[in-house]
Length: 493
Ligand code: ADP
Image 1 (tube, helix red, strand yellow):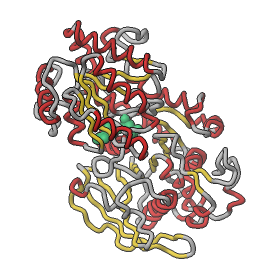
Image 2 (cartoon, rainbow, N blue to C red; image 1 turned 30 degrees about the horizontal axis):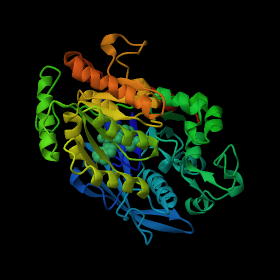
Image 3 (cartoon, rainbow, N blue to C red; image 1 turned 60 degrees about the vertical axis):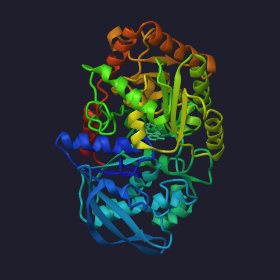
Image 4 (tube, rainbow, N blue to C red; image 1 turned 120 degrees about the vertical axis):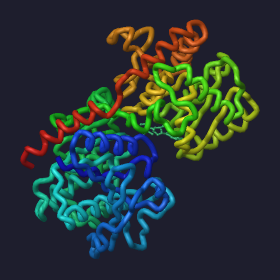
């Protein structure tokens, strides 16, 4: 099958969070399973050009209709660790992708509406005929709309779309102007509730809703989150739309790329290890302690790696630091905040705890350091408010770093409580789970983990090794996606 992935991220060249990992990892596994995969991405000025090989002009003069005129674009092609990627560069005064950031601009809606239009225009003008186009999140939600309403009539009638929602929180709520800009026009048609009109704000359009309504298949990133999306408020207002389209909606658990995330081959860590020589992990702990000036002691080391925002349960992350100290454990945090207030809060904590030999707070994004922390820590805490899938607990498992998680979303599908899980055998249990959002729930789960570490080190070690044996690779999720692709490619639009 010929599959084109269109997304706003692809790790490691463009990575703000899990989306980048997923787009890369799924593409690689689909290729391993014999499919032809190409990716279309924006050409950001701030992406990691050092991860692109052999970049060259693929399509010099791509003219993309935009409002009443056209924008001149160039498409470059290069290999990102073996994946064929097309990068779209727009030559216009808007400088859509030359902002020194991936997201967070006032005109993000227009930037990604333009990217969506340009990606389709590129497919059409270059006569590419993928069987399936796989789009991701709100940034590409208009692609199915434009394919079905416009490009289908211009040579793209056989392309089918799989649309994956990685986070319901950001939906691309926008106004009339995207219709004018993209040439969809006809506001009276699109401003209907069964089309793209936002379910809450009748004066707005919703790009993610467009993706759900117009795609042939819709997925989210774990089975439990799919259930939550249909039955709880986590869908952020899209419940009714999902309800109507639930026949084509399902959850497919993300995987992690074992070539990148595996302690036996990881190039960023000083000591590689496997389940066979698990004791080697301790040397990574030593290396991290040296690097961060932490005390070398027999205390357990607990980590948090992730964005610092409300979704991730920042209050509990904050409490976890102090509870770890109270329980004679060490804590390392690596996180970037998008909201200034959260950044200042943690920057203050960093200053306040600067002289404590048992804590390190690193604010910012650092891929290389994240690998060392996964390899060094004994436990990783993921106290999310909601978590569509979550990769950090899966990476933690692979590195023998026992996850302590809140039982929501994909965390439910991947972490099974050592003491209380009733659905899995003792050999399948791999972490600690709590459910409430208060400090006591977190303390109780952290306490159980720390006690096991201190009082029964052998059992703790077994638990960590059991986690390393979990197969959260892309093999099975990619097979699920292939099944979805096969189903939709034989369907009439
Ligand atoms: P998100 O909601 O951000 O997508 P996920 O758990 O799905 O969360 O994925 C997070 C990914 O981003 C993981 O690969 C994690 O290691 C990485 N990550 C998050 N924050 C940082 C950071 N500050 N530095 C390095 N990597 C990070």
